[in-house]
Image (cartoon, rainbow, N blue to C red; front, side):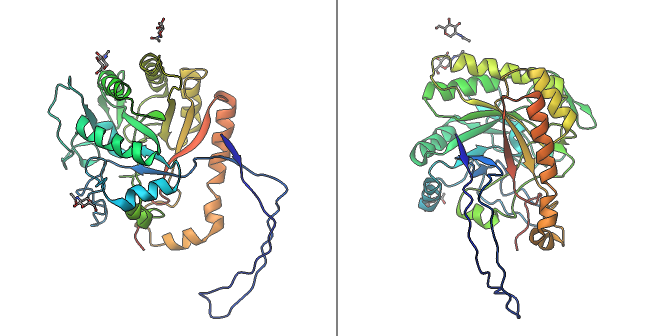
Length: 353
Ligand SMILES: *[C@@H]1O[C@H](CO)[C@@H](O)[C@H](O)[C@H]1NC(C)=O
Ligand SMILES: *[C@@H]1O[C@H](CO)[C@@H](O)[C@H](O)[C@H]1NC(C)=O
Ligand SMILES: *[C@@H]1O[C@H](CO)[C@@H](O)[C@H](O)[C@H]1NC(C)=O
């Protein structure tokens, strides 16, 4: 559903609390033209896989905020989510492409993430036990967010070197997981297949969401496998094929449902050629939502971070990327919506001010 951003004409006086010399300013907003349309449920948060071992610059901010161990009994957490009246929650983040789903047929032991030298993002694979998935869904049925789940998109591929991953997506574990989810009647709004890359080291969000995070849901990271990739890269042709596979799985497993979840992707940083190719290869109507990740403030450790946040000219730079993305989608995939799939302002767990 589209919502027209209400623009109201109002002159206001801004007291400059922080300055010694108090100044006054009038701000006039032209309410005659809507500059953008946004979704009703545009407020979102990520539940991430990072655990207490995830550290940036000697800070290890994630504590027990992981999908695997976040305390779902905390009353404030539930209330905060309910207060948004359909907060969109994405379950995902950098480690999502190393997640196994602990379904009955899983051929490996189901263990949590551990730090591991040489592992992608410095971590081992991890596993989501179905008992925890049950708990999460029990929590969601109580708090009623719209859930987007980011699937393990590196499954079955092998690392060719230099961050490039090749081979078809092995969807068998994801298939069993989605089947389990459907058979339990758990409501998933959208399934995302996306992957990560190493242009930016470890991505995670802290800046805008840091305090918010601890009050609400631990907002998170991404797994950006498109374009240049953050840690891993997969070609657009391959990705397009895998998207069609996911679409088939969703069509098959949700055959009896009136409402089919949306297919979301690619969840990465904008790269014109890659995004265009993906939409061309996967074809009409396959990708329902094109996502882009946004970390336009750079790394959380940047000493100029505060200046950048306060500089609207700097912040405005990103609008060019949105214009380009919108043009690419209009040309190659006009059926798709565009979302910011993940953002925190500053990456590498942001910065605590
Ligand atoms: C989870 O939160 C509840 C409610 O605040 C608390 O009673 C419980 O001890 C917490 N559990 C853990 C493992 O911290
Ligand atoms: C899907 O899940 C149901 C319920 O657990 C099970 O009976 C069925 O065999 C599964 N289907 C497939 C194709 O795995
Ligand atoms: C969906 O169900 C119908 C009728 O039960 C069946 O004919 C069709 O092949 C199914 N489609 C898929 C994609 O499984």
